[in-house]
Length: 176
Ligand code: IMP
Image (cartoon, rainbow, N blue to C red; front, side, top):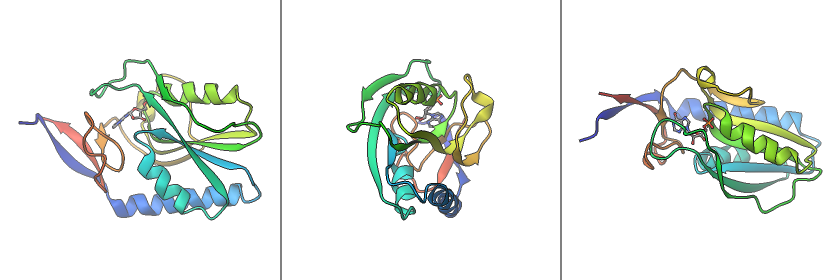
């Protein structure tokens, strides 16, 4: 039997409305950009990315990068492994790195540094959730959904030991 329960934390209606706000801001700020590229960080960001880009009515491209930092645990081991790189050049492009959640910040810091070397025109960090109390490095999202306390959350792309990514709402895990 599981030693935890799931408690509803963010309703799908609130997620939807937050995504609309983020998409409107990006659409306004980048209305003149012809070279928008959205890079989703797999696996957690795929649902968020899919909803955000469908709410943006500008020409854009999509790519994915895969990293691994959690191994069936709620704690990071601090090592960000690149499992799959993007398949497009970044030079001269307005790039959005899209993450499900910023926790310690190690993943996005590592990816931002990796992308900066490739000389994009701009890099923005976009995340649905932010846990600032857990930050180990100095990194902030330019576009973000919800700031949350130190809970481990699942659903809407986020997993615990590989499960719950398909849930439409976001839940917090409460250990018994
Ligand atoms: P960071 O490098 O510590 O900022 O962690 C980023 C990654 O850790 C996210 O993309 C998630 O995959 C994972 N992560 C951090 N917090 C949570 C959580 O509360 N639920 C599920 N995954 C999380």
